[in-house]
Image (cartoon, rainbow, N blue to C red; front, side, top):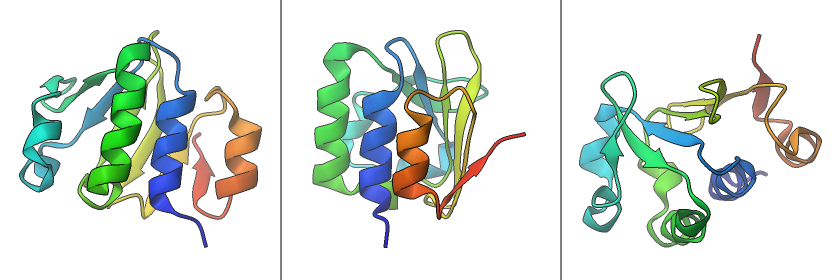
Length: 119
């Protein structure tokens, strides 16, 4: 069985620097205060985090420490170009990934039972 926690860590690990991790507003009440302090104004009335190399390790640690996969209702990852490359709904119960997401073959080999390719 796959671990949503591992999936979320791998997504953050592989997404390019200057990508943006966008979180739905209904996730905010569930998030730990320490994590909320890292959030910025997001896209489309959401909140999120601009992913830098410095923030990547911090984000991975926060995911592991606070089980963020169980607290984020809906989430989206955008490449630096603005291309939407990942959509996760209902606490990662439904996951859609774009064909241009880095390390796609690896992600499908490990999480293929929960990942769906975007149209």
